[in-house]
Amino acid sequence: MSRFTEFNFSGHKALVRVDFNVPIKEGKITDDTRMKAALPTIHKILSDGGSVILMSHLGRPKGTVDAKYSLEQIVPHLKELLKGVTVYFSADCVGTLAEERAESLNSGEVLLLENLRFHAEEEKGDPTFAGQLSRLGDVYVNDAFGTAHRAHASTAIIASDFPVGKKMFGLLMEAEVSNAERVLHAAEKPFTAILGGAKVSDKIEIIENLLNKADNIIVGGGMTYTFLRSQGKNTGNSLCEEDKLDLATDILNRAKEKHVAFLLAPDSVIADSFSNDAERNIVSNDEIPEGWMGLDIGPEAIQLFSDVIAGSKTILWNGPMGVFEMSNFREGTKAIALAVASATQQGAYSLVGGGDSVAAVNQFGLADKVSYVSTGGGALLEYFEGKTLPGIAAIQE
Image 1 (cartoon, rainbow, N blue to C red):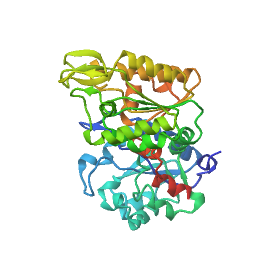
Image 2: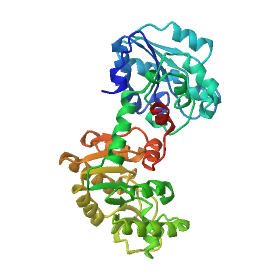
Image 3: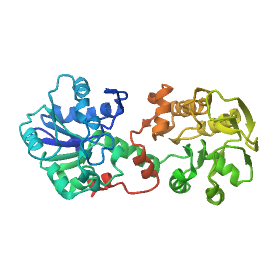
Image 4: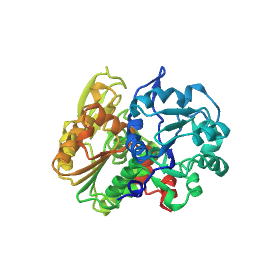
C-alpha cells in the first residue's frame, strides 16, 4: 500500500500541487488530460472526509498578474469534472485572502488557488513564499509529475515545511514514478528504447544513460540524419547538426562496445520542401539527393523497427519517427505506435512519454493499448537521463 492510499484524510486540509497547465484557446480548454489525471487523487481525499486546496501554474506569466493566464477560467470545467462538488476560487495563492478561503473550507469542498507563477518567488524556489503556501493546509500532496524536474517553491521547497508523515505523492505521481522506475531499474529483457525527435543534442543524455540499460536503441526523426552523416552518407537537405558529427560517431562506437543494437532507418520518405504538399519519394538512406530532405522513415525501416519491437519485453518510446503533424509524413510514427500496441497485447510492458509521442498514441486511438502513457514531458526525459528530480527527492527524503 502507498503512503497516500494508507493515509486517512478525514478532517485534514490537503494542499495538493497539480499540473493544470492546460492548453486554452479563445477561453476554451482544448485538452483536459492533465485535469482528468488528477481526479483520482482529489476524489480519494474528498471521500475520506478531507478538503482539497489545489495549486498549479498556467503558462509563463513571469511573475506578473496576467488575466490570460488566470486559473479562474478553468473553474467551470473543474466543476464539471468534479460533478456536484463545491469548488471555490481564490484570486491569490498566498496572503490574507487565500488564508481566509482555506480556513473556511469545509470537508468535501475544493479550493483552487490563483496561478502560482503570478509570483516570481514560485520559480525562484523562495522558501518564504513556500512557507506562505504551506500555511494553507496541514498535509502536502505532490501530484504534478510534469513539474517534478523544477525546484520551484510549490514542487520541492514546500515539502520541508511538512513532517514526513504528512507529505506524499498523489496517485498520479506515484504511478509516474513507479512506471518510470520499472523501465529504468527493473526492465525485463529484451529492453528496446525508441527515440525520435529533431536533434541529437536534445537526446544525448538519455541516449548515453540508455546505452547502459537497453538492448536495442531505435533512432528516428530528424536526428537520424546526423548519425547517417557521421557515417559519411549523403543526407541531402535533411536536418543535420554538423557540430555533433563526432559525438554521433562516438555514440555509435560506444553502442558497439556495449553490444547494444543501435538501429538507424535504412530508408526514408523524402520531400523536396518542408511541406505536406511537397513532392515525395522513398529512397535508401545511403544516398538522399541534394535538395531533398528526409521527413519520415520508409517501409524498410518500418519493417525492421517493428520486428525488433515485436521481440521486446520492455519498450520505452519517446519521440516521433518523422514530421507526423503532416498527414503525408505520419505513416512511420503510426506504424511504430501500432507495433508498440501489438507488442503490448502480446505481453510486453510499454511506456510512452514525451509530448509528441503521447500526442501520437492519442491521435491514433492507441493510448489504451499501451501499458502506461506518461503526463510528464521534460520531467520524464530528465528522469531517464539519470538526473535527480527535485519534486521527487523532496518527498523521498
